Length: 281
Image (cartoon, rainbow, N blue to C red; front, side):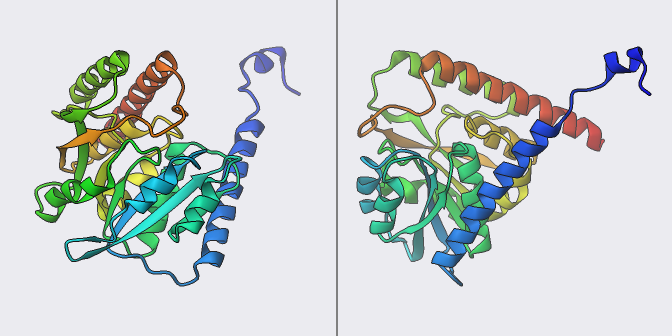
């Protein structure tokens, strides 16, 4: 029988955590099964343009119309991971004729992208370019992002609105981009100007290496940079045009909420990577 002292120091029951993990696993398995049933024995082109989309029925159609089918002589496959939601984002994507994987419930952009990385790797991609489904990134710039990787001068390339042109007018967000880039550079030993940009290009072996270390379900851009940097991958940046959202509002909250959660993602990733490096020594 447990003593009173033992009851005081007993850790909380972890059933809720196990239940949550089991439910997430179930949702991901359902999405994988649905994708395999819709596209049996599919083989992607060497370049995958990956979009994680949540409640973007009014925006994603125009983005998909602008997606290239070739970059030089490399075939481009467009893959949309629909992160749950209650609108017609999935149907718009399917009607556009692109590969579409649908999560039955919303898990967050980070979780949707991890599933996309997994599908890209499993179906033959050599390179992955991620971009937003809201119209803020220009698909016509995908070749610019990919070129340093094709030239073998980089393994992972991030678009920079600060080196290019930022057409948005939110001064608070602009200040945040500068602040968080400086913070992340100090942590990761990089010299990036726009570490929170979701327009990125990867060699597939970078993703194969880091995906098992990624845990952020929403504010995941900093996590990818810190993790890839800690594992020795070459990271560079190219200028980009940053457009206002075509319509609607960000799903990541207002400026204060976004800023707090993005800072938390940086700090928790830094702590996890630092602890992991010490453990391996």
